[in-house]
Length: 292
Image (cartoon, rainbow, N blue to C red; front, side, top):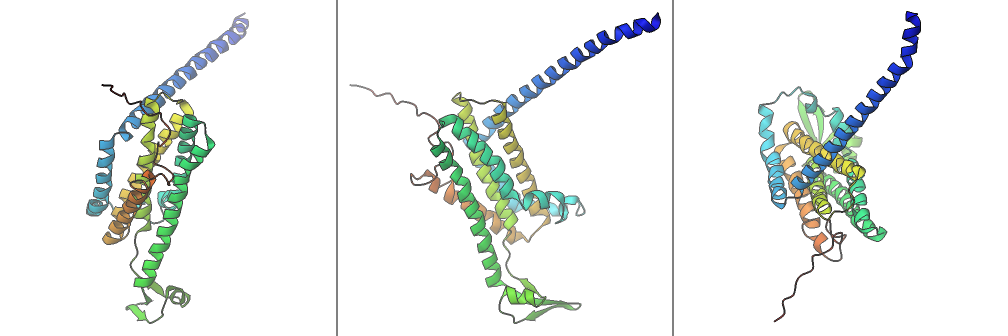
């Protein structure tokens, strides 16, 4: 009889457990949704503040100029001090690819949901094409500087022996080392990506203020961009602490800032440009005219 009672109570107990699990899932989804909406609202308000964006430029300058001083106060054997660490290989070396993927999705969603026009969306996405051209052009310029300022050396047990080989290719072909002035391409790229992402993500505050569609997918993409921006800041700090010579890092960051100024700070405000972030997305307020 006891066995029959236990068996008979089984389906009811399973139903109660399933109902409890269903309620738990609903609560977790509600909490996740609330955190998503709250986090995206606060991050949009933070990034949308013009004052904080100006302070952000000062923050990046301070990281590059004073960050190397931290090398005397950190552990030189940490994972971030190795050129072969996971973050350096998977993220820093492919920083532009990550930036284009995450930021491209955000710009695509914001512009298309605000305008429903493919041509306007393509125009705003072309800023990433310009950024890719800047990155490629800067990389080639840095290699040219290294070629023009370099010399060929042969490593010996006693030190380095200078050779009169005329260029990098012949030097490396002979098994020697070419050493010239090497602008830090990682510092350039991380600085440029930080400034670019902060500028693009700042549009979301105005997007929300105009009451445009902002569902969970768009908010999630926005927060992923915010997290990536935070990661770039952290990896920039690690780069200036552990890698490259001081002037190489400062020059790289200065070139990255100058590239941002030429594009986002100047050219994109012209009518014959891809347009600045948010341009043409939101209705302009009608100015009231006073009649005498």
